[in-house]
Amino acid sequence: MFVSRMDSGREAGGGVAAGTVLMRFVWPHGGRSVLITGSFNGWGELVAMAPVEGCPRVFQAICSITPGYHLYKFYVDGEWRYDEHQSWVTSEYGLVNTLLFPMDANCNPTMGSELHANMELDNEHFRRVADVQASRHRISVFLSTQTAYELLPKSGKVVALDVDLPVKQAFHILYEQGVPMAPLWDFSRGQFVGVLSALDFILILRELGNHGSNLTEEELDTHTIAAWKEGKAYLNRQFDGHGRAVTRQLIHAGPFDNLKEVALKILRNDVCTVPIIHSSSDDGSFPQLLHLASLSGILKCIFRYFRHVSGSLSVLQLPICSIPLGTWVPKIGESNGRPLAMLRPSASLSAALNLLIHAQVSSIPIVDDNDSLVDIYCRSDITALAKDRVYTHINLNEMTIHQALQLGQDSFYPYELRSQRCQMCLRSDSLFKVMERFANPGVRQVIIVEAGSKRVEGIVTLSDIFRFLLG
Image 1 (cartoon, helix red, strand yellow):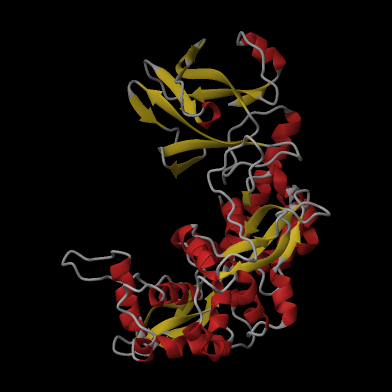
Image 2 (cartoon, rainbow, N blue to C red; image 1 turned 90 degrees about the vertical axis):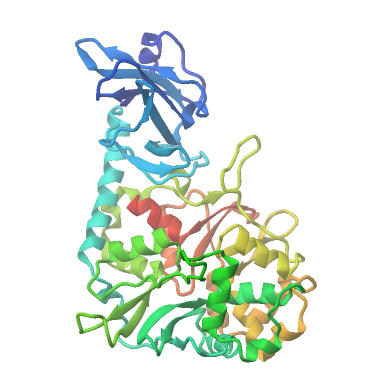
C-alpha cells in the first residue's frame, strides 16, 4: 500500500478531504469478493476492493485516511481475514493489520505501537518511515544481544520477604528499607513465589476502610503475606478447577536472558519489575536472587550505548507529538480511548487510590484549577503511610492528596529524588530528550506540559517508551 497525491485522488474519481491523504490498500492473496474496513472509516462501511488489471489475485482500494495510527481488516469471501505478511496486532476486533502514517509536528497523536513495513510512500515520507524502522530495529537487536547480567550493579542490596511474615511488619520493612516492592520467599517450598508491592498496600488499606470487610487493623499483626495473597486471589476470583484460590505465579528471568526478553516479560505481564533469579542446579533448587530488573534499568542500558550516536537514530530525533506515544488530553471534538486521569490537590486520598486501581495506572498528575501541573501522586507514595503507623488513624475519605504528599516529603525519598520524580517535557521535545528525563533516578513517568502555563497535555511512561520501541 502507498500514499498517493491529488492525482491519485482524481484517478479514484474523487477529491481529498482537508487533513487527509489517499492510501492504497492491497490484498494479494486472491478471492472472489474482497472488502476492507478499519479505524480510518470508524469500522463502518465495507469498502469494495477491485482486482488489479493483469493480476486477478491482487485486489486494491484507495481510501482517504488521516495521518496517525490505524487498524484495518479484510473481508474475503464472507470471512474476516488479516494479511500476516504485513504488520499486525491483536485488538478488540481480533487479529488486524496496522499502519502508522507520520503526522505533522503539531498534531496530537493517536494510540498505537506499529510502523507499517510495506508502505510505499513518496520519497520523503518513505525515507522517513524507513529510517524510523531501521532505528527501532537497531535498538531491538542491541537489546537482544545484551543479557540481564548487564543490569546487575557493582554493589547494592535486594530485599526479600518471607511469606509467613505479618503483612503489617512487611510494609514497615518496605518503608524502612526505602523500596516500593520485594520478592517473596516460601521457606517450605524453597523458592520465590511472588512479589509484595505498593499496590498490595493500597488494596489492604481499601479493605481496612471497607466496613463489610473481615480484615481489621488488629488482624494485620498476625495476618501473613501468604494469607493476604490467598485472600487477594479470592477477591480477584482466581480459582482452579476445584474452587481453590490460585495466586499469580511469579514472573522472573535468569541472568543470561536477553534484555529484549526481559522487557517483553514486563510489558506482557503488566508488572513493574522482574526478579533476576539464578540457580546452579538443573531442578531450580537453591535459587539466588540477584537483582530486580525494571524498564528503567533497561532504558539506561540503551541510553548509555546510544548516547553518543543518537544523531544516527532517526527515531530518537522525532518530536514526541509526531509518534504514537503516551496518553494525551484530547482536544475539543476529539475522542480518546484511554482518558488521562488527573486530580486536584483537594481530592481525597481515597479518590486517588481508587483511580490508581480502576484506571490501571501507576501515577496521577495533580493539577490546579487551570489544569497546570502541581505534583504527581504515585503508587509507591502509599508506603509513606507506614511511617509512625499513620494508616491506623486516618480516614482515606478525609485525608487530601495534598496532605498525603506532605507526608511523603518526610518519607524515605530524599528531597532531590522526590523533585526528580515530577519530570516535565514539551510536545515538541524529541524522544531522546524525553529518554534523558527517564535516566534520572526515581523517574517513572514524564508529564507533557504546555510551555509557560505548565498545563498538562499528556503523560509518557516507561512502558509507553518500550511499547513503541519494541512494537
